[in-house]
Image (cartoon, rainbow, N blue to C red; front, side):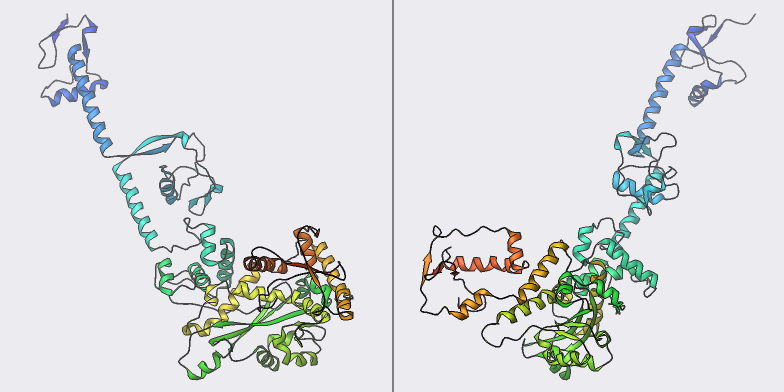
Length: 564
């Protein structure tokens, strides 16, 4: 008969176990108590694994407390050697915007959103933009719980952070793929929207006129060029933005020809109404200041006695809405507009090709010497009349007004061109040969990415105003006839009026625009009023002629001379 009593296996225990009472002992020979047998062996207790091993309940509880303390200590040590980061709770088959292959996306998510996701997490392709998450994607942080990174995982993460810091240190601050540069910053540095620059980059890449080099990419070269044009900073300053030493690379650009139908599509409502349906070209030159050259011949050619500076000229050929057909140059500053145009007409240039019978050329008074040359080729010339006396006649003023109404677009183009500081400021002599290519590149970009300078906002209303202007050119000026019949000389008696003696009609801004056929006079009125009110203590002196109360006058200062 087997024994019903045995001793506890623990050395420090002297209890005798009654095997008939199962609640007073534990049989630890089973695999579940392997941890306990290992603990006993570590204490120097030996036993035969073939026999049953018994441990009293008190000793078993003591060893369990010891095991728990050891587990807690190990967990504390493990926590000291791991990194706790937020980890999302992801239901099965649910997308979390992380691709299987793109480890960098996991790193980006950790850096940008403080969330760690393992690279094997699935992702929808629509949530990616290259190797990054789409910036429009929002991440719900309410479903996150902390996770522990092992020493190896934390080491890899630190290594990625180290590489990212190196890459950002060497990367251009202005870049098309830099997420830290927003649309407004890019436009303030280059003058163009990101979509415009992307279109330029695609065009250059497809044409293969420029390739990446070990010093710079095509995208960096494109942005570098526009930063130079927009800001005219020194190359060392621009190099700081791109983290490398610069070597200027400029390329010229030729304009593609437009068909007569395409040219006609650039006609404005006013140009069609005033000068018919033929093709119309506007000419004007603009000047670009340069430094004094050490070459005596070049120094003499580029010096202008009028402006007392050295500069070169470019001749612009534009259409009615401000679209630029071509830019010719550079020409010496000592040459006037007529001499430049005469040279172009005598050679087989773009300008001569466009001067066909039936076309119309619009220019200012500086081109008067070449007017006969254009007319000999059958071109209709439109030019403001010269001032033959102190004041234009009514007919001359009206004729000039029609021309300046159309010709203002080429002046607006030159103003838009000079917003690029490279062309507005003095250009160094080292870039003398690059001036015209730069002008052509900027002009081509303005044609492609900027809206027309003259664009109708209300075609029906503008057509109505154009008809009124054309009719009034030939209409009789009743005030003129009255003045000629009975001049208002010094013998005429004028009486002062105050605000209570006259009920002057109130006009809206739209009515003033219709009266002035534009906004130029309205804009000038503000400065005229400020100058007058500052000088006359805020009062206007309004007078009426004694002989009739239908004619009043108001004295105001001229901005050109001291007379009123």
